Length: 129
Image (cartoon, rainbow, N blue to C red):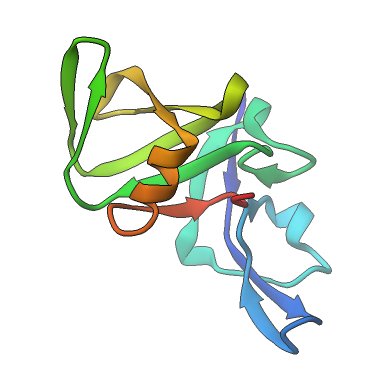
């Protein structure tokens, strides 16, 4: 899989009437004509992770957990360290979260995600429903 660089960018938002930062990252070719790339936000990703030049794909989010998250998974309590993770939508409004600090993906319900987005987690890239 070839690696490509993606960037956040600023572009005109006609609803807000101002330049805004993109919610998804994109390749320089994709950004051309849409806005100005923020070169200091470069990230290398696999070309198979792109959606028409945009990253991440729909129903995939890059999230940052900035406070300890502790969840019950089966009969085990899991404490997830702070850091950046990839969250993917699964069937029945559940989400699989994985990252370099956590080798085995863990599942969150929609209610848990909504609660964590209120203070323990933020979406870095991707569009939340």
